[in-house]
Image 1 (cartoon, one colour):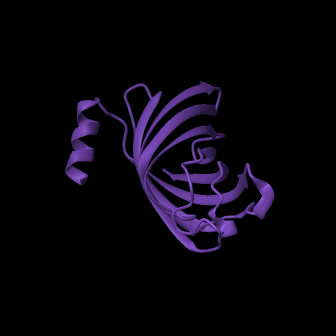
Image 2: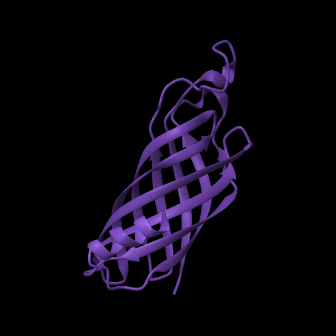
Image 3: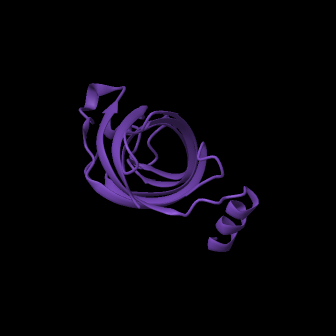
Amino acid sequence: MKVLLFSVIASLGAVEPMLIELIVPGVSYHTDRSYNYNTLNYGLGLGIVQPQKNEQYEIGAYVVTYKDSFQETAYLGVASVKYWSSIDIHKFGVSGQAGFINGSGYKGIALFPLLNYQFNDEHGLSFLYVPNIGPNRRYPEDNPKHNATSVFVLFYSYRFK
């Protein structure tokens, strides 16, 4: 996997050094509020980010563990592609992530769109959208936790330079 990631990076013409990113999950908002899922999602994650030639694009890989909306330990591992636009020291981005998630009653492959804001070279916020991906497979139909819902998640990132 590591060799594959480095091969992809080399083929895209990366010239910038790789960065390590610390991820701190924040709050979540569920579109169906009937079960009071909205919560703080404590956790921690790490990422490896590779800016590309003009620093408008970057690719990365992330591993994050957190407390899901049922207050159970969850984790995800994803690959990411980001596009950045800058205004002075502020960077605004859109990105997509694809990978594996095990949490909130779902276990499998998932795709996530994100909006990103980097307010200097080190600190950033990301707004993640997790679409409703169907019934919660972990709980039977008659259980109130069976409800599936779309989720918005805000998290903080710190880039080590």
